[in-house]
Length: 273
Image (cartoon, rainbow, N blue to C red; front, side, top):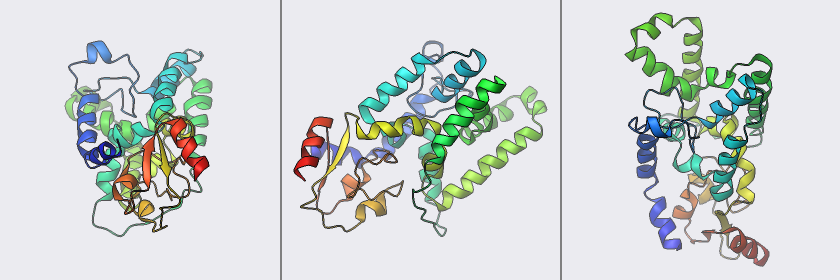
């Protein structure tokens, strides 16, 4: 089974491309547009096939003042199965961040000690402010929404182009700031801002899909951290809440001591290690 994970990890870029196409395939909109997307993908994108779960949560708690049981249930199911795996494999904006980071410019490695800020974004912009204002404020400011929805609509619609004003330029400024940041730091939006990642992060420790490290085999070479898109020391905490299950560490480990398993298998391994 571990051979399969190695094989799959080498083809993650292909999966990310197919996911971006599938989540924005347009032709299935009539059937699937009401279903929560298993990634952060803007509902306003002209080709979007699914509803953004964060946008749906804001609409239900803000406009309707109800608990979004259905959306939270779908998000919880995905988290229970793969933790933040969708962030690493299915999210189009996550893929964009990885592409921008490949630009040949000096890089800035930042620690994860402040990644609690994504929970602040989740609480304030997804729940508190929408309840008070009845407006989906995270969607209004979301750089992924600007890239996938705002810019395309301004390009293809003359009416919307006429409506674009100061706030649109503010949105472009936010997107530009994140593009600059992600060119020097790995996945900054995922690590410090994304509220969907915040919802999935606690599931990493209890999800069916888990990582395990054979501490007797590990040589502490830190190769796992060097290739990790969210800068985790995998050998210290393989199921860190920031982990996006991209399996780069599994692919690159020189001792093949990082493995993928189920919850029960991993717990037994952790006790044995």
